[in-house]
Image 1 (tube, rainbow, N blue to C red):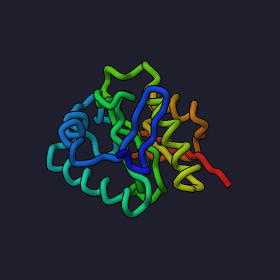
Image 2: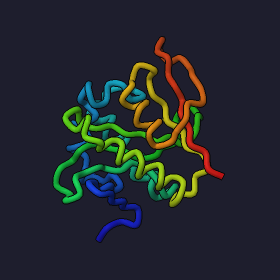
Image 3: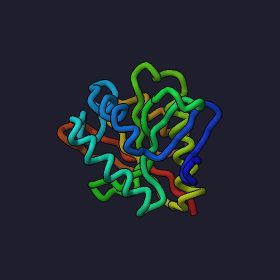
Length: 169
């Protein structure tokens, strides 16, 4: 039985992360090209385990969180997408990370679009943010394509970061 928080798109199945996803998440989060530019960078297995526990609790507490993204048939793990409270208090953030081999296929765009729709239309969030490095043109392109607009800039560890937002009344 699917969770009420399950989302399906034309090619993807997004299911709330669960213990069964640990092996896939640990591999993705340890990969420098997949997770190197994420807040906090690559993770070890212990960090991934702690994050997974928090992510599972987020679904129960908030009605939103991170999804494991798989091909629609459910077999192939492609990456993650979802929503989380940013630790820097910038707001509830849309996040996504995919295996490098999935890049250029439109999968990240499809997952990010579904996540933003869920944020506004299911979770009833008025404002959603996303943060990308200034030099991360792929993520910036996706954020713009789903209708998010640049709203702020800040520097983290000497790197210019851009904040995007989507606001619905």
